[in-house]
Length: 428
Image (cartoon, rainbow, N blue to C red; front, side, top):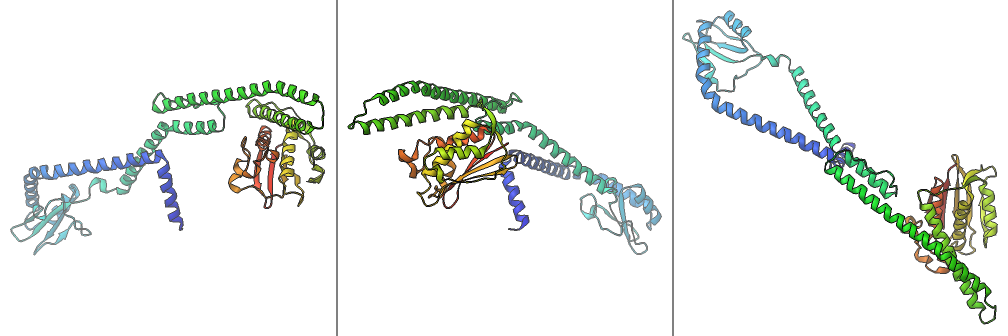
Protein backbone atom coordinates (compact mmCIF):
# COMPACT_ATOMS: atom_id res chain seq x y z
CA UNK A 1 0.00 0.00 0.00
CA UNK A 2 1.36 3.42 -0.92
CA UNK A 3 2.07 5.97 1.85
CA UNK A 4 -0.62 8.31 0.55
CA UNK A 5 -3.29 5.62 0.67
CA UNK A 6 -2.09 4.56 4.12
CA UNK A 7 -2.35 8.10 5.46
CA UNK A 8 -5.79 8.49 3.90
CA UNK A 9 -6.92 5.26 5.54
CA UNK A 10 -5.56 6.40 8.92
CA UNK A 11 -7.35 9.73 8.57
CA UNK A 12 -10.61 8.01 7.69
CA UNK A 13 -10.33 5.73 10.73
CA UNK A 14 -9.53 8.68 12.95
CA UNK A 15 -12.46 10.66 11.53
CA UNK A 16 -14.81 7.72 12.11
CA UNK A 17 -13.55 7.28 15.70
CA UNK A 18 -13.26 10.91 16.85
CA UNK A 19 -16.48 12.65 17.76
CA UNK A 20 -14.66 16.01 17.94
CA UNK A 21 -13.34 15.78 14.38
CA UNK A 22 -16.75 14.81 13.06
CA UNK A 23 -18.46 17.70 14.86
CA UNK A 24 -15.88 20.19 13.56
CA UNK A 25 -16.31 18.79 10.04
CA UNK A 26 -20.09 19.14 10.28
CA UNK A 27 -19.78 22.71 11.60
CA UNK A 28 -17.37 23.76 8.83
CA UNK A 29 -19.45 22.16 6.08
CA UNK A 30 -22.61 23.72 7.50
CA UNK A 31 -20.94 27.16 7.61
CA UNK A 32 -19.72 26.84 4.02
CA UNK A 33 -23.13 25.65 2.83
CA UNK A 34 -24.93 28.51 4.61
CA UNK A 35 -22.45 31.03 3.15
CA UNK A 36 -22.92 29.65 -0.34
CA UNK A 37 -26.72 29.72 -0.05
CA UNK A 38 -26.70 33.26 1.36
CA UNK A 39 -24.34 34.64 -1.30
CA UNK A 40 -26.21 32.86 -4.09
CA UNK A 41 -29.53 34.19 -2.88
CA UNK A 42 -28.24 37.72 -2.46
CA UNK A 43 -26.58 37.65 -5.88
CA UNK A 44 -29.80 36.47 -7.50
CA UNK A 45 -31.80 39.12 -5.67
CA UNK A 46 -29.45 41.92 -6.69
CA UNK A 47 -29.04 40.70 -10.26
CA UNK A 48 -32.78 40.36 -10.86
CA UNK A 49 -34.07 43.28 -8.81
CA UNK A 50 -31.44 45.97 -8.92
CA UNK A 51 -30.27 45.47 -12.50
CA UNK A 52 -33.49 46.85 -13.91
CA UNK A 53 -33.32 49.87 -11.60
CA UNK A 54 -29.62 50.57 -12.27
CA UNK A 55 -29.74 50.19 -16.05
CA UNK A 56 -31.10 53.67 -16.94
CA UNK A 57 -28.73 55.34 -14.45
CA UNK A 58 -25.69 53.54 -15.90
CA UNK A 59 -26.78 54.30 -19.47
CA UNK A 60 -27.16 57.99 -18.72
CA UNK A 61 -23.77 58.07 -16.97
CA UNK A 62 -22.04 56.37 -19.92
CA UNK A 63 -23.56 58.90 -22.32
CA UNK A 64 -22.06 61.69 -20.21
CA UNK A 65 -18.65 59.98 -20.23
CA UNK A 66 -18.74 59.64 -24.03
CA UNK A 67 -19.64 63.33 -24.36
CA UNK A 68 -16.75 64.21 -22.03
CA UNK A 69 -14.30 62.31 -24.26
CA UNK A 70 -15.27 64.47 -27.24
CA UNK A 71 -15.37 63.79 -30.98
CA UNK A 72 -13.06 62.29 -32.04
CA UNK A 73 -12.32 60.72 -28.61
CA UNK A 74 -9.46 62.38 -26.78
CA UNK A 75 -6.94 59.87 -25.40
CA UNK A 76 -5.74 62.35 -22.76
CA UNK A 77 -9.26 62.74 -21.37
CA UNK A 78 -9.72 58.98 -21.45
CA UNK A 79 -6.51 58.50 -19.45
CA UNK A 80 -7.71 61.09 -16.92
CA UNK A 81 -11.03 59.25 -16.54
CA UNK A 82 -9.26 55.90 -16.03
CA UNK A 83 -6.99 57.46 -13.41
CA UNK A 84 -9.93 59.06 -11.59
CA UNK A 85 -12.50 56.25 -11.83
CA UNK A 86 -12.21 52.44 -11.41
CA UNK A 87 -13.10 51.83 -15.06
CA UNK A 88 -11.43 50.63 -18.23
CA UNK A 89 -11.92 52.24 -21.65
CA UNK A 90 -11.31 50.78 -25.09
CA UNK A 91 -11.60 53.01 -28.20
CA UNK A 92 -11.82 51.49 -31.68
CA UNK A 93 -12.30 53.58 -34.82
CA UNK A 94 -10.88 55.11 -37.95
CA UNK A 95 -8.81 57.80 -36.17
CA UNK A 96 -8.19 56.54 -32.61
CA UNK A 97 -7.42 53.01 -31.37
CA UNK A 98 -6.53 52.89 -27.69
CA UNK A 99 -7.03 50.52 -24.75
CA UNK A 100 -6.48 51.46 -21.12
CA UNK A 101 -5.91 47.80 -20.13
CA UNK A 102 -4.46 46.04 -23.18
CA UNK A 103 -3.41 42.98 -21.16
CA UNK A 104 -6.99 41.90 -20.44
CA UNK A 105 -10.42 41.93 -21.97
CA UNK A 106 -12.99 42.26 -19.22
CA UNK A 107 -16.66 42.80 -19.52
CA UNK A 108 -17.79 44.92 -16.61
CA UNK A 109 -20.62 44.93 -14.16
CA UNK A 110 -21.92 41.49 -15.15
CA UNK A 111 -24.23 42.89 -17.86
CA UNK A 112 -24.40 42.49 -21.62
CA UNK A 113 -21.86 44.22 -23.86
CA UNK A 114 -24.37 46.57 -25.58
CA UNK A 115 -24.97 48.22 -22.23
CA UNK A 116 -21.38 49.33 -22.01
CA UNK A 117 -20.68 50.24 -25.65
CA UNK A 118 -21.39 53.50 -27.40
CA UNK A 119 -20.82 54.49 -31.05
CA UNK A 120 -19.98 58.14 -31.75
CA UNK A 121 -21.02 60.16 -34.79
CA UNK A 122 -17.58 59.85 -36.41
CA UNK A 123 -17.66 56.03 -36.29
CA UNK A 124 -15.64 55.32 -33.12
CA UNK A 125 -16.81 52.53 -30.78
CA UNK A 126 -16.15 53.17 -27.09
CA UNK A 127 -16.44 50.22 -24.67
CA UNK A 128 -16.41 50.65 -20.91
CA UNK A 129 -15.59 48.04 -18.27
CA UNK A 130 -14.32 47.61 -14.73
CA UNK A 131 -10.77 48.73 -14.06
CA UNK A 132 -8.49 47.93 -11.12
CA UNK A 133 -10.65 47.85 -8.00
CA UNK A 134 -9.18 48.89 -4.62
CA UNK A 135 -9.25 45.37 -3.22
CA UNK A 136 -7.55 44.03 -6.34
CA UNK A 137 -4.40 46.06 -5.78
CA UNK A 138 -3.31 43.78 -2.90
CA UNK A 139 -5.11 40.50 -3.59
CA UNK A 140 -2.57 38.41 -1.66
CA UNK A 141 -3.03 40.37 1.55
CA UNK A 142 -6.80 40.03 1.44
CA UNK A 143 -6.50 36.33 0.58
CA UNK A 144 -4.15 35.63 3.48
CA UNK A 145 -6.35 37.65 5.82
CA UNK A 146 -9.41 35.66 4.75
CA UNK A 147 -7.54 32.38 5.23
CA UNK A 148 -6.32 33.48 8.65
CA UNK A 149 -9.83 34.42 9.75
CA UNK A 150 -11.19 31.09 8.47
CA UNK A 151 -8.48 29.14 10.33
CA UNK A 152 -9.10 31.19 13.46
CA UNK A 153 -12.80 30.39 13.31
CA UNK A 154 -12.09 26.67 12.81
CA UNK A 155 -9.53 26.70 15.65
CA UNK A 156 -11.95 28.47 17.95
CA UNK A 157 -14.70 25.99 17.08
CA UNK A 158 -12.37 23.05 17.69
CA UNK A 159 -11.23 24.47 21.04
CA UNK A 160 -14.84 24.97 22.12
CA UNK A 161 -15.87 21.47 21.03
CA UNK A 162 -12.80 20.00 22.75
CA UNK A 163 -13.71 21.80 25.97
CA UNK A 164 -17.32 20.73 25.54
CA UNK A 165 -16.39 17.06 25.12
CA UNK A 166 -13.60 16.97 27.70
CA UNK A 167 -15.78 15.01 30.14
CA UNK A 168 -15.70 12.14 27.62
CA UNK A 169 -11.94 11.82 28.19
CA UNK A 170 -12.52 11.77 31.94
CA UNK A 171 -15.24 9.14 31.56
CA UNK A 172 -13.00 6.95 29.37
CA UNK A 173 -10.08 7.19 31.82
CA UNK A 174 -12.42 6.51 34.74
CA UNK A 175 -13.89 3.44 33.03
CA UNK A 176 -10.36 2.10 32.48
CA UNK A 177 -9.53 2.65 36.18
CA UNK A 178 -12.74 0.98 37.31
CA UNK A 179 -12.06 -1.95 34.98
CA UNK A 180 -8.70 -2.46 36.72
CA UNK A 181 -10.43 -2.42 40.09
CA UNK A 182 -9.14 1.04 41.11
CA UNK A 183 -12.24 2.67 42.58
CA UNK A 184 -10.45 5.18 44.82
CA UNK A 185 -10.40 7.99 42.21
CA UNK A 186 -13.87 8.93 40.89
CA UNK A 187 -14.54 10.65 37.58
CA UNK A 188 -14.30 14.45 38.04
CA UNK A 189 -17.56 16.34 37.55
CA UNK A 190 -16.68 19.42 35.50
CA UNK A 191 -20.07 20.74 34.37
CA UNK A 192 -23.72 20.30 35.39
CA UNK A 193 -24.88 19.12 31.94
CA UNK A 194 -25.77 15.75 30.39
CA UNK A 195 -22.15 14.58 30.34
CA UNK A 196 -21.71 15.64 33.95
CA UNK A 197 -24.84 13.70 34.86
CA UNK A 198 -23.48 10.66 33.00
CA UNK A 199 -20.17 10.90 34.91
CA UNK A 200 -22.07 11.12 38.21
CA UNK A 201 -24.11 8.03 37.37
CA UNK A 202 -20.95 6.09 36.43
CA UNK A 203 -19.38 7.13 39.75
CA UNK A 204 -22.45 5.84 41.55
CA UNK A 205 -22.24 2.56 39.62
CA UNK A 206 -18.54 2.26 40.53
CA UNK A 207 -19.32 2.77 44.21
CA UNK A 208 -22.00 0.10 44.03
CA UNK A 209 -19.62 -2.33 42.33
CA UNK A 210 -16.94 -1.60 44.91
CA UNK A 211 -19.46 -2.24 47.68
CA UNK A 212 -20.45 -5.56 46.15
CA UNK A 213 -16.81 -6.60 45.76
CA UNK A 214 -16.03 -5.62 49.34
CA UNK A 215 -19.07 -7.56 50.53
CA UNK A 216 -17.99 -10.60 48.53
CA UNK A 217 -14.47 -10.38 49.93
CA UNK A 218 -15.75 -9.98 53.46
CA UNK A 219 -18.05 -12.98 53.00
CA UNK A 220 -15.21 -15.17 51.71
CA UNK A 221 -12.96 -14.12 54.56
CA UNK A 222 -15.66 -14.73 57.14
CA UNK A 223 -16.52 -18.16 55.71
CA UNK A 224 -12.88 -19.15 55.51
CA UNK A 225 -12.24 -18.15 59.10
CA UNK A 226 -15.37 -19.90 60.32
CA UNK A 227 -14.55 -23.11 58.44
CA UNK A 228 -11.05 -23.39 59.84
CA UNK A 229 -12.14 -24.35 63.34
CA UNK A 230 -14.49 -27.26 62.41
CA UNK A 231 -11.92 -28.51 59.90
CA UNK A 232 -9.24 -28.52 62.57
CA UNK A 233 -11.53 -30.45 64.92
CA UNK A 234 -12.49 -32.92 62.18
CA UNK A 235 -8.82 -33.53 61.33
CA UNK A 236 -7.99 -34.02 65.02
CA UNK A 237 -10.85 -36.50 65.41
CA UNK A 238 -9.71 -38.36 62.31
CA UNK A 239 -6.18 -38.56 63.67
CA UNK A 240 -7.55 -40.05 66.92
CA UNK A 241 -9.50 -42.80 65.18
CA UNK A 242 -8.17 -46.26 65.99
CA UNK A 243 -5.75 -47.36 63.27
CA UNK A 244 -7.35 -50.67 62.38
CA UNK A 245 -6.41 -52.62 59.27
CA UNK A 246 -9.94 -52.36 57.90
CA UNK A 247 -10.25 -48.57 58.34
CA UNK A 248 -6.74 -47.54 57.37
CA UNK A 249 -7.66 -46.77 53.74
CA UNK A 250 -10.79 -44.81 54.69
CA UNK A 251 -8.87 -42.93 57.39
CA UNK A 252 -6.12 -41.94 54.94
CA UNK A 253 -8.69 -40.78 52.35
CA UNK A 254 -10.49 -38.71 54.99
CA UNK A 255 -7.27 -37.07 56.12
CA UNK A 256 -6.33 -36.33 52.51
CA UNK A 257 -9.70 -34.70 51.84
CA UNK A 258 -9.45 -32.65 55.02
CA UNK A 259 -5.94 -31.53 54.02
CA UNK A 260 -7.24 -30.42 50.61
CA UNK A 261 -10.03 -28.46 52.25
CA UNK A 262 -7.53 -26.84 54.62
CA UNK A 263 -5.27 -25.86 51.71
CA UNK A 264 -8.24 -24.49 49.77
CA UNK A 265 -9.30 -22.32 52.70
CA UNK A 266 -5.73 -21.10 53.20
CA UNK A 267 -5.43 -20.22 49.50
CA UNK A 268 -8.76 -18.41 49.56
CA UNK A 269 -7.72 -16.36 52.57
CA UNK A 270 -4.37 -15.52 51.02
CA UNK A 271 -5.89 -14.59 47.65
CA UNK A 272 -8.37 -12.22 49.28
CA UNK A 273 -5.62 -10.61 51.36
CA UNK A 274 -3.42 -10.09 48.31
CA UNK A 275 -6.30 -8.85 46.13
CA UNK A 276 -7.14 -6.18 48.69
CA UNK A 277 -5.82 -2.70 47.81
CA UNK A 278 -4.43 -2.51 51.36
CA UNK A 279 -2.41 -5.73 51.16
CA UNK A 280 0.47 -5.50 53.65
CA UNK A 281 3.83 -7.02 52.77
CA UNK A 282 6.45 -7.82 55.38
CA UNK A 283 9.53 -6.98 53.35
CA UNK A 284 13.02 -8.08 54.29
CA UNK A 285 16.21 -8.79 52.32
CA UNK A 286 15.73 -12.19 50.68
CA UNK A 287 18.37 -14.32 48.96
CA UNK A 288 16.28 -15.81 46.15
CA UNK A 289 18.83 -18.44 45.20
CA UNK A 290 19.02 -19.83 48.73
CA UNK A 291 15.23 -19.72 49.06
CA UNK A 292 14.78 -21.61 45.78
CA UNK A 293 17.27 -24.31 46.80
CA UNK A 294 15.58 -24.80 50.17
CA UNK A 295 12.13 -25.12 48.57
CA UNK A 296 13.36 -27.57 45.93
CA UNK A 297 14.80 -29.76 48.70
CA UNK A 298 11.47 -29.78 50.57
CA UNK A 299 9.24 -30.78 47.62
CA UNK A 300 8.68 -34.35 46.47
CA UNK A 301 10.84 -34.75 43.38
CA UNK A 302 12.44 -31.36 43.93
CA UNK A 303 15.90 -32.88 43.66
CA UNK A 304 15.22 -33.26 39.92
CA UNK A 305 14.79 -29.52 39.38
CA UNK A 306 17.67 -27.95 37.44
CA UNK A 307 18.53 -24.55 38.94
CA UNK A 308 20.34 -22.08 36.67
CA UNK A 309 21.40 -18.90 38.43
CA UNK A 310 24.50 -16.72 38.86
CA UNK A 311 26.10 -16.73 42.29
CA UNK A 312 26.17 -12.95 42.70
CA UNK A 313 22.45 -12.20 42.64
CA UNK A 314 21.54 -9.29 44.96
CA UNK A 315 19.20 -9.71 47.90
CA UNK A 316 15.83 -8.05 47.24
CA UNK A 317 13.36 -6.53 49.74
CA UNK A 318 10.59 -9.13 49.47
CA UNK A 319 7.90 -10.77 51.59
CA UNK A 320 9.57 -14.11 52.29
CA UNK A 321 6.37 -16.02 53.02
CA UNK A 322 4.61 -14.80 49.87
CA UNK A 323 7.66 -15.45 47.67
CA UNK A 324 7.90 -18.99 49.10
CA UNK A 325 4.25 -19.45 48.13
CA UNK A 326 4.96 -18.25 44.57
CA UNK A 327 8.03 -20.46 44.04
CA UNK A 328 6.38 -23.48 45.65
CA UNK A 329 3.32 -23.25 43.42
CA UNK A 330 5.40 -22.81 40.27
CA UNK A 331 7.69 -25.73 41.09
CA UNK A 332 4.77 -27.92 42.11
CA UNK A 333 2.99 -27.24 38.80
CA UNK A 334 6.18 -27.95 36.83
CA UNK A 335 6.75 -31.26 38.66
CA UNK A 336 3.13 -32.39 38.27
CA UNK A 337 2.72 -31.41 34.61
CA UNK A 338 6.27 -31.87 33.36
CA UNK A 339 5.59 -34.94 31.24
CA UNK A 340 7.02 -37.63 33.54
CA UNK A 341 10.75 -38.26 33.69
CA UNK A 342 11.61 -37.22 30.13
CA UNK A 343 13.34 -33.97 31.08
CA UNK A 344 13.43 -32.38 34.54
CA UNK A 345 11.92 -28.92 35.13
CA UNK A 346 14.29 -25.96 34.93
CA UNK A 347 14.30 -22.91 37.20
CA UNK A 348 16.29 -19.91 36.02
CA UNK A 349 17.19 -16.72 37.89
CA UNK A 350 18.70 -13.74 36.09
CA UNK A 351 19.10 -10.01 36.58
CA UNK A 352 16.46 -7.69 35.10
CA UNK A 353 17.48 -4.09 35.70
CA UNK A 354 17.38 -3.50 39.45
CA UNK A 355 15.29 -6.63 39.98
CA UNK A 356 15.39 -10.35 39.29
CA UNK A 357 13.49 -12.43 36.75
CA UNK A 358 12.45 -15.90 37.89
CA UNK A 359 11.43 -18.42 35.23
CA UNK A 360 10.14 -21.95 35.82
CA UNK A 361 9.83 -24.18 32.77
CA UNK A 362 8.64 -27.73 32.35
CA UNK A 363 8.96 -29.95 29.29
CA UNK A 364 5.47 -31.38 29.24
CA UNK A 365 2.68 -31.05 26.65
CA UNK A 366 2.14 -27.36 27.33
CA UNK A 367 -1.19 -25.56 27.17
CA UNK A 368 -3.44 -24.66 24.28
CA UNK A 369 -2.68 -21.11 23.10
CA UNK A 370 -6.30 -20.04 23.61
CA UNK A 371 -6.04 -20.90 27.32
CA UNK A 372 -2.78 -19.09 28.13
CA UNK A 373 -4.41 -15.80 29.09
CA UNK A 374 -6.82 -17.55 31.45
CA UNK A 375 -4.28 -19.61 33.40
CA UNK A 376 -3.88 -16.89 36.03
CA UNK A 377 -7.63 -16.49 36.59
CA UNK A 378 -9.09 -17.79 39.88
CA UNK A 379 -10.54 -21.33 39.81
CA UNK A 380 -9.55 -21.86 36.17
CA UNK A 381 -8.19 -25.26 35.18
CA UNK A 382 -7.32 -26.52 31.74
CA UNK A 383 -9.16 -29.47 30.23
CA UNK A 384 -6.10 -31.64 30.80
CA UNK A 385 -6.07 -30.82 34.51
CA UNK A 386 -9.62 -31.63 35.55
CA UNK A 387 -8.72 -34.46 37.88
CA UNK A 388 -8.50 -33.41 41.50
CA UNK A 389 -5.37 -35.51 41.93
CA UNK A 390 -3.37 -33.34 39.52
CA UNK A 391 -5.43 -30.28 38.74
CA UNK A 392 -6.00 -28.72 42.17
CA UNK A 393 -8.74 -26.10 42.41
CA UNK A 394 -7.26 -23.51 40.07
CA UNK A 395 -5.91 -21.04 42.64
CA UNK A 396 -2.16 -21.73 42.36
CA UNK A 397 -1.36 -19.61 39.30
CA UNK A 398 -3.81 -16.95 40.45
CA UNK A 399 -1.94 -16.66 43.75
CA UNK A 400 1.39 -16.44 41.89
CA UNK A 401 0.09 -13.53 39.84
CA UNK A 402 -1.20 -11.76 42.96
CA UNK A 403 2.12 -12.21 44.75
CA UNK A 404 4.09 -10.81 41.80
CA UNK A 405 1.73 -7.84 41.40
CA UNK A 406 1.72 -7.12 45.14
CA UNK A 407 5.52 -6.70 44.91
CA UNK A 408 5.13 -4.32 41.94
CA UNK A 409 6.07 -6.94 39.35
CA UNK A 410 4.20 -9.08 36.88
CA UNK A 411 3.64 -12.71 35.91
CA UNK A 412 3.64 -13.94 32.31
CA UNK A 413 2.93 -17.37 30.82
CA UNK A 414 4.05 -18.69 27.43
CA UNK A 415 4.36 -21.98 25.59
CA UNK A 416 8.07 -22.87 25.45
CA UNK A 417 7.57 -25.64 22.86
CA UNK A 418 7.90 -28.06 24.43
CA UNK A 419 6.43 -27.32 27.81
CA UNK A 420 5.16 -24.26 29.63
CA UNK A 421 7.31 -21.37 30.88
CA UNK A 422 6.11 -19.07 33.68
CA UNK A 423 8.11 -15.89 34.30
CA UNK A 424 7.80 -13.70 37.40
CA UNK A 425 9.49 -10.30 37.34
CA UNK A 426 10.34 -9.07 40.83
CA UNK A 427 11.57 -5.47 40.91
CA UNK A 428 14.22 -4.34 43.33
